[in-house]
Length: 224
Image 1 (spheres, one colour):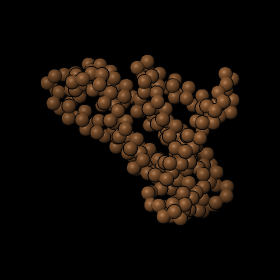
Image 2 (cartoon, helix red, strand yellow):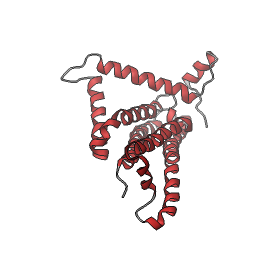
Image 3 (cartoon, one colour):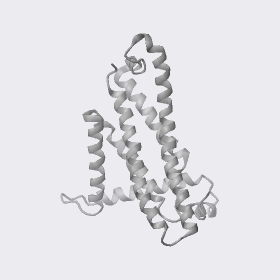
Image 4 (cartoon, helix red, strand yellow):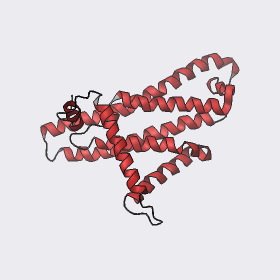
């Protein structure tokens, strides 16, 4: 099932540009974040109000969650985690605007985010522990190390797959349900579904960023 009308798809067709809906809406999300960031920092005051107050609330919330999950070692990863949170949240909320599609309802977008988490996790682990990072894959009992190593490798390879499909499944599923209700009863009935969409947008953002923090924090820990 596809959207009956997508504004940016129509625009790219008029301009004879074929780059995929998820790419154009990713650019839209990036543009929104740039504009909001500029508006929030254009006139910074000690007593925040308006957009500055909104952004400070979101940033402080992400910062507190990061510190609770990763501790003080997580502070260097704040730009990465905050970027994930803001991009995914705005991408999810874009779905509630008629004629717009969330980039996170596309596997390619989510796979790029998930692979970034995957690469960062192991890059951080290798940087901090060196060759000793392999101990994370060996388990606590030496004679079970070969079996545990295989299990751990499979588990780590499954992480980007689960991150990708979880976000994709929830956002694409919500899009399908919302389009069905809009097609059947276009006025009143879709409103509760759109309100539920706001909740889904925040929950999926929280789940993805929380798992990203847990994975990176696990790579930073000493192997036992």
